[in-house]
Image (tube, rainbow, N blue to C red; front, side):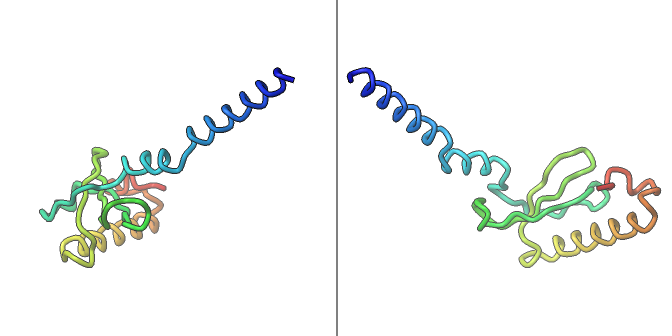
Length: 116
């Protein structure tokens, strides 16, 4: 009888340990590492940029931002396009370049690194 109580207790402790190990707070902490905590309002030269993506506050990050990736693989954080004109113009530039690269099947030099 005592051994069944001990085995039930050990199963319960293992289950509790698993629940604590895989908690949502732990998962959210991992996501926060990929978020922009600050943004720069200084414009970025378009010729060094490769692509971009948008970060949203509702996805677990502390603020909305646009993250530009440079040709050297660095991520640069900028404010949302609605807030700053140069960000909107840069996004339009990158979208246009990607569209032209798709039309030429990424054969031009400016398209290297863009192929999805």
